[in-house]
Image 1 (cartoon, rainbow, N blue to C red):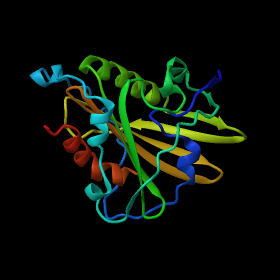
Image 2: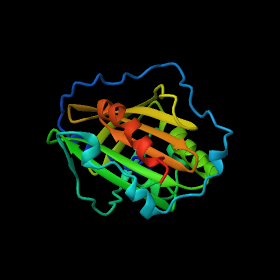
Image 3: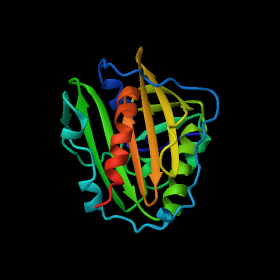
Length: 229
């Protein structure tokens, strides 16, 4: 079955395959076949914290000064909802809203920033805020759909892209956490992208990009996003 959809959480296969490799001194995360200890909810009082506005979230995004040398902030462009045909993944048929066409998740309060590193590789951060229940249910639905098909294919224009997804173990931070590694293959080129999401009370942090860069900066992003101000 074919549906019009793009990769969720703001990633598009064509963009990712265009990124050149960039070496780092960080050990890249490896996918594991065992289920991760994800979805653990906290019963603490922080779960009832009031949601933050989009303006407040924007102030809590990482900046170049938080990342170190070699990073450049990428100008934010309007979301482009390209037509993408998904083959072989019924779980993606149920995706609705902006997330189903490659934009932001379906939460009204959000902010996003993207950085280039080593003149090519990218890492992006997305912040969302809503009630703990809405963040939990919405994020879980997206990640379950994305990882519900271990392998599938998308057609972007005349280009076929093979995609494989796998859950990976998440660092035990925040109230809930989700993490996956996505492998893209097209035209003889392969690339690997990690997406890690952490919900802490009424704030959701999503970091995507090179597995090494995601592992390096997720903790910084979470600490800045949830700092008391």
